[in-house]
Amino acid sequence: MDGEKSVGGLLPKAYNSLKNGDTEGAQRALKEALNLDFEHPEVIFALKCLSWWGERFKKLPEIQDSYGRGGFILSQWKGFYGFLDRMEGEQSDSCLYAVKRYVFSQALGFFEDVLGEGENQHDPFLLLQVGRCCKGVGNFEEALKYLEQAARFRREDGETLSELADVNALLEETRAAKALFREAFFIDPQGIEIRNMDSELILRLADRVRQLGYTGQELLEWIPIYGAIYGVFSVKREMKLAELGKLKQSIFTLENEARGGALLGRGGSLGRKETPPGSGPLIPRLINRYLWLIDHYENTRADPVLIEETMLKIKLADPAVYERYRN
Image (cartoon, rainbow, N blue to C red):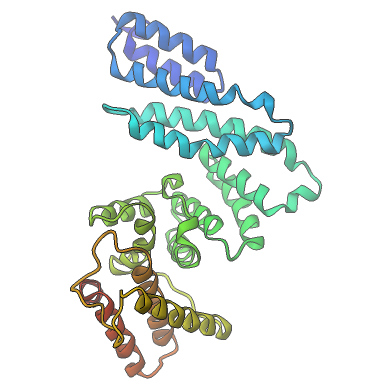
């Protein structure tokens, strides 16, 4: 069977309807496709996705304001990832793209109602949400505008900087993306939702680190280290004097915590050849700071002895990382 009356024709029709916000049209096309092939895996997958989101959207009338409705929609993405993880079989990228376009466009509409032209134009969290939604619907230039505004207010927020980095990468502004990702993963790796990222720059790096056995919170802590090792986080900036002081204090605190947890010996040695998955965030967090300190020494042309001393600390913390970084 050819044309729109075949499963191959009805699926794109359903996805186009969904991207345009016509969920009823998408449902009709998918049900028609299901009548043609009751066991077609992509049709079944798409219907399950629509059903999952349909149940969530039923709750929107219970939320009184547009800001809350938009926030509720975005908050459901983590649950949707869990739903996808539990599903068996191959998943359709075309379907997921259409679902994302639909969901983020709905959330964007609510946030735009709130944004208006008044004081909300300066609400950093609202600007972040609008930027995320613009990115989700594929309007990267508009996303960049809002995320840059949000970052002016949230310079120390890893989530905001990671979203800004991601959209820069999608716009092929690679240098800016690398610098911003490096900053975001230094400030707050746990505040970054890696599955909300869309650019190949960060997703490929995350996959490589995941292949080493790191998952969950640990994955986020190791990403900046391997980002430095693999040359992804290669764009660096000079640190201010106050930042350097905070960095050194942070290193001192983490070293004490690591020794207290028997992750580091009193002489600074780890006591094992490398940090295995499941060891927690302290060691990668500490190594990340060592790398920033080395960058500072290199940028300021400090005494090479200081660099070697810091490299030795990395070697004592994790010899495998030391060897990879050296090479």
